[in-house]
Length: 399
Image 1 (tube, helix red, strand yellow):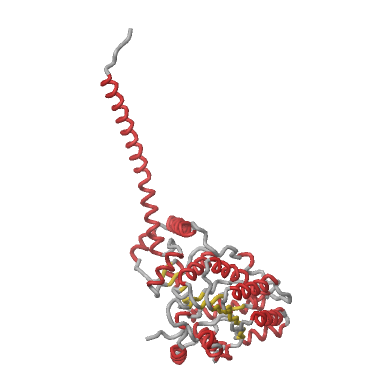
Image 2 (cartoon, rainbow, N blue to C red):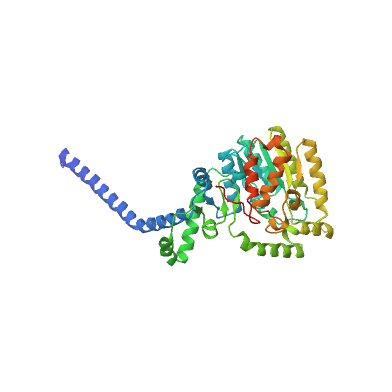
């Protein structure tokens, strides 16, 4: 027996089924939102802390901020590669006419004082940057067509020691940030902040009670005042306090033939090949390279050479001199601080010059090669600043 069901009733049942389905879906979504809400709130809390501290702010964002706020000091928090990525981003964005590049031995060269306008010069000094890493960095700039007109290349003998393996285990081979780097940097900053504050939840209230907006970005910068300025130079406010410890550390390393002061009599050829590559790259792209041997504490340097344990150094200098001659590029030797009117006291350990000695070296380069540097620098301004120097490490503020 057939039963006829009115079409309208069938449609009503269909609509009712759809309404029930939608209702159930809404309830399900609401439950998910209720369950997820605490986790979202916690995530936003840690994200807010990480952003306020600067630990979740990727270098690309900081570089842009520093161009509008030259007082902003930033220290990438997580790895040595982060510092390479930060400097690479900065050079690509600023596109300076003059680039200072090398290891931490040029950290304190104040390019904002050496050169006339903000952006015409940039200090791309990198932590323990060996010649191979510098060459890769410059290859990356060349690929973006952002090589400078003039490059000051700081050459550090210690990276040419065949037996000096202290950096090679932590080498940064890819100096160009990956496409997803900014996103990963931000997430990593939030993750590590969450990890830290989850272990010490009482610190959350302490952070918000004491938080003040600052021109210091990144945990290291906020806690110590140390970090990179907009011109790429390194701010180190407690230099006088830590200098004795750094000198003692260098003395211990030297006494034990360890790390940067490992003994050696053979040259690490990949470093030599990297210098050759840099000069060839510069020649092909019409970049003038000025090589410099940066200052040592003279007493320590003479002790190194007379010990016979560092016989690779004179050979390195001989071969690099020939290399620069072959390419018609100038090479200056500033091993001894007194050649520019400085002294050993203007180095804060055995190898690193402060701001004052860095400017003395550049002033000598400006006088020696005005045809290269005069277009970028105000010699009267630099002389006035040097005449007002009243301490061993820090340059006086202008104005």
